[in-house]
Amino acid sequence: MTKSPGSHSRGRHARPPSEFAIRWNRLTASLRGSRRRRLAAAVTAAAAVAAVVTAGVLVLPGGSEPAPRAAAVRSAAASPSTHESLAAAGDPDEITDAVPYFETKDPDGKVVKHVTDVRRSGSFVRVYTDLGEEDENSKPALDLCKWTTQFLEDGGDDEPRVFVHGKSDDNGSVVLANKQSDKDDCEVPETR
Image 1 (tube, rainbow, N blue to C red):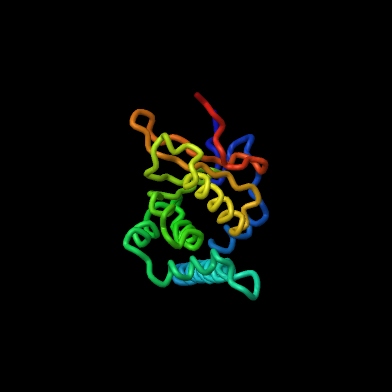
Image 2 (image 1 turned 60 degrees about the vertical axis):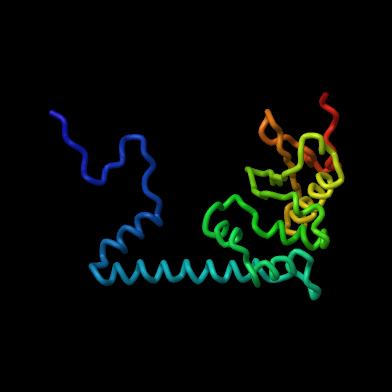
């Protein structure tokens, strides 16, 4: 005859619960109804306060003079476009403050007008443009690569990795410029 395990059995090879888990289970078991809800509300409120404080610390500029990126972030926050508002509510990989940063580098808008999207893809940042395949290593592509690298370094990234993409008729998005290592100068080597 076999005995069925107790309701708290975790299996023969399972780790025993940690001391924290044991204490937490005892605390929540001792609380009834409204006391348990108050504890959950207090934990939630503490987490919300911690998130607000963390966000406030991340936004503070580092020195007495505001960095160009901080100024771009402030100008973007002052008048968000419809596209930025949708992006803020949607895709977490989209980098909405990159284009305003680029505009500080390109006040005439001759290069920035080509940017269609800036997004994070793993450890890389990809800048999508309306430039064509023939614009490989062109001045706009190289400028966008260098500006994105500076943008990432200003944000604290020690090893920025950047790809600037253009449109291709038969190959989707081609790489026009990239920075894959600290020694890379953003130029794409000849592949033909």
